[in-house]
Image 1 (cartoon, rainbow, N blue to C red):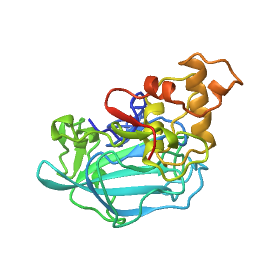
Image 2 (cartoon, helix red, strand yellow):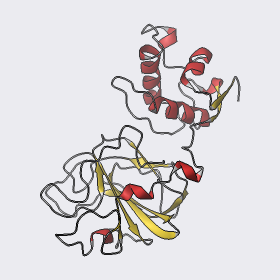
Image 3 (cartoon, helix red, strand yellow):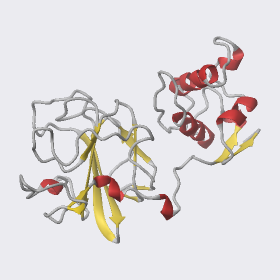
Image 4 (spheres, one colour):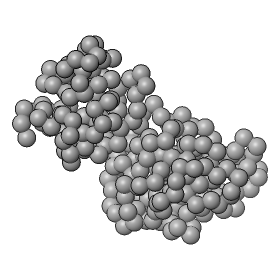
Length: 266
């Protein structure tokens, strides 16, 4: 299943209602700032908002935030998925077409929030900036959490039912394919091999590990995570060439699974 966040980051903090009973009708995932946020289905970015800092404003209802409104098709009907409280510098623009599993943004704490988390809501119809909160409309104080569509015929709950399942034949991008070993070194840019490395590192549980953006750039964050893997998983001695953050051929064989094809040169 293509989920909005990486595996291990999908615990739900708030669901149908807030702890004091107010309507919420969405999922809040309490994840740290910078966690990759993914498209749960193929679709188009109906609208988005960017440029708000990660400074939460818990006392300001309606405070501007960074968000992406993704238009999808679910069960043969048009639907929308709202991702909110994102970090600035979104990775998509209005009108952009995306595939299931494409990274849209990083999680954050922008807007009316008490701390870092991802807010995800789903609703029928392709919505606009002005109607992106329609999933909350006319939900009564007594309505219990539905398992499908709310009584307002708009809100899809739980929202993760719109996530693409493996039965569709879709797999996360960069979870397989060719990896060119000459690209696995610090300083390489715009490389699918580096994206596959970043994806592979994101699947490994590392002490003090962090989620990497699938940028394709072998930047300092990627080098640091690769070094952690070399020391913690490959048991290399710190401050040696084997633990310098550049992945060698033998290490690549260990890090990448059988779904990847390793080649020496691009």
